Image 1 (spheres, rainbow, N blue to C red):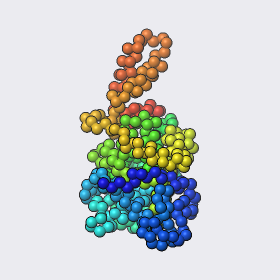
Image 2: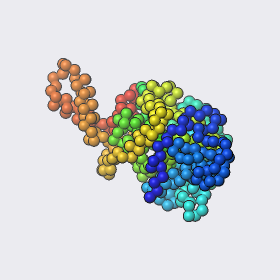
Image 3: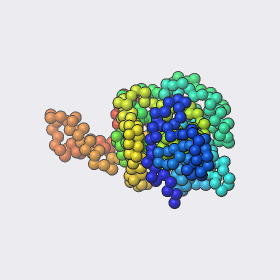
Image 4: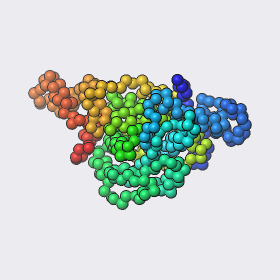
Length: 404
């Protein structure tokens, strides 16, 4: 079994602090001998946990992590139909480049799958400039024969081939209206994440893809694990950070083949391949409002601080998610919004929360004993309308209407 990356504790590399046109910290331009192949190179790459190596040896190492993640688990069938999610960030371009490289190898080393690429346009939701269409078209030419598609978040059935794509002129974006009805940024970010996942699933089904590649790296998964627990999604937190997430409808499986790569390795790969990200990492909805604006922002800032000061802790947090047991009962009912297992019967904590809410609402004037209040709390858990605890919290923040 391939063991590469098991002692990968160098997650930070201070790459998040690099400025435009600056070299990622750890790339040495002075000539030297590669520690791996002993060939003299004019550009050496020095990861925190490895000796300096040349460009070719570094690319081989990084690409092997991608192949090892898929090969060790044997979760990608031969000739599978794969949908790659492109968001314009550095990590999504790395995933695209790695998959294309794996597809262009000889018959023995080739990754046998059929890939399509979808770019999710979030311009209206994110309130930012639209994507550079020329840059997207250039990517579609560079990474032929992959088919490139574009879909606009919140615009329903707007899937188009990149060569036929024209931005929607519709000002009526249903998703924006729903986000505006949510009271807190925490609820809006959580709702947007679930809607984006459901949109990608619908695209995969329409393109007849059985697997989806998502470009999440180790620091993203560490943040996602802590965020899921903070939002009350602890019962499904393991699937939020696992290599394989099988909660999507239509038997579509979500894979995270870059989960063992660090931010430093992503920045090195971008430099080595001269790739140009369309957007800077971290340009997510609501991030510009500061670290205290939501639970997600606060958790992201906390993990970023860990990455800067205690790099190995980020790896420890992320790998803890792999050790959390997942409820695998096939008959377990699932949430109609996020497809996670319904947690009303999984934890006494939720019963305690509803009991406290019942006591708070009853006050001192209500003639109810403890058994009555406990019975009321149990009924509230049963009357959940097919939603898990975290999605019910989003529903509770809606000023009007239903979550779905």
